[in-house]
Structures are given as C-alpha cells and as structure tokens.
Image 1 (cartoon, rainbow, N blue to C red):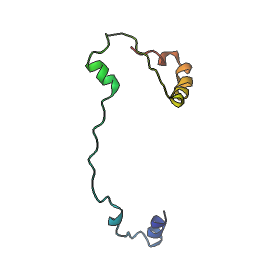
Image 2: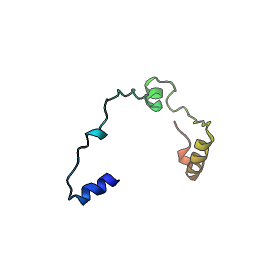
Image 3: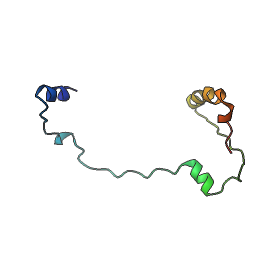
Image 4: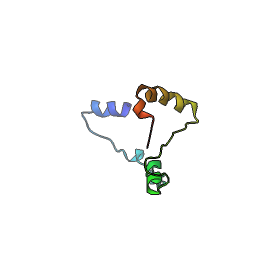
Length: 78
C-alpha cells in the first residue's frame, strides 16, 4: 500500500517492479472434471432418475439448508 502512495506522491512515476514478479512459473495441476458432466457423459444414471446430494461437512449442511428450504424446486435434481 505504501508503494502505491509513494508512486502517487511522485506524480505517477513508477518504480522497477521486477522484484515482485514470480521467479518461476509453476505448472498448474489439471482441474478435475465437473461431477455433473462425468455423470451425464458416462450415463451413470438413467434419464430422469432422482439424484440426492448428501453433505457430510456440518458447515456445508448449515450453509445450504436454509437456501434449499426457501424454494422446494431447488432440492430435487433429475
């Protein structure tokens, strides 16, 4: 933050920022495929079959409970 204020105080002239750049680029791990896409693409469930989400982490259960109860259309998935 102080660097930004110093640049502004100097009339907008910037300093060499190379010291802040990453030294080495790390390869990112590939993302896991979306669960919905896997289920659909593998035809893991018959068309129209009900699907139930079971959460085991209490914080996730609490976070979603009120949202799901507020609209009954949010709970079922087919």
